[in-house]
Image (cartoon, rainbow, N blue to C red; front, side, top):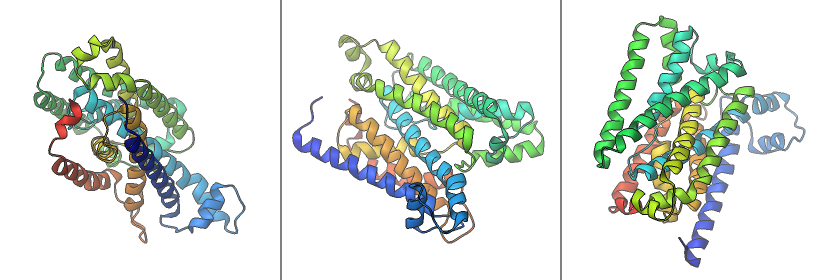
Length: 353
């Protein structure tokens, strides 16, 4: 899939702009909060240079730096997960939350937390050991993989993408109903913590839990980048991809594994965070004007990280002590992005044919 010289230059420029936005958002996310820290001081702390206020150093290194790193992992992982699903299903509306992956991961978390008598809120995640973190990730990934496998199994019988989308939404509805039923028979304090988890938060992931999340997301991203050529071939249809020598079954398994790892681990630690997975792939296609996944994958990583960092800055309500739920902010910003892309590109289906 050759790219003209002018297009290649534009793409490189956009990648550099997105990288710059990620760097700016990363520093701003650390600087903003209930205690405002000047940007030069943030940069000095990140470069491990001495400053006059030890309290700022503690806040940055122990609280805000882990949160900003979590935002990078969450934004990159969800954006790449959404991009893979849209290509695999050849459906512009596919995404981790729309097709029920987030609900499946939530069911896995509910099974671990509500059944074990613990709680799934961000504060509760801090109380879990590394073993608990891996158990949470395994449960969430298994839930997401089961839902993804069920949707894919049905996709072999259903050829209409709209029908398949409805199937995914119904599976998500059933999964949500199971979780609601579980909550109905659980203790009130467990329900309260679980509801807090459903709002989405980056602040509960620190220390060993951040290491677990980063490790799983890295594996998921490596699998996704290794599938770039397969995704390009699948964009032309499974039959055509098969005629080009692609082993469709193996490629599909790798994509499912990558998507489940990314959506499952992120949902386990940070709660369901909507619209990043569905909005960012459309945004990157509109910016780069290409369907080549060798460019879309790194661009989605950068755009997802920049969007999540920006949403977290807004969620902290600069100048206020209050913090908004992250999933609310991403939905408020993500929905207009999707609408803008859909209304601006009347031939959006051409990206999937």
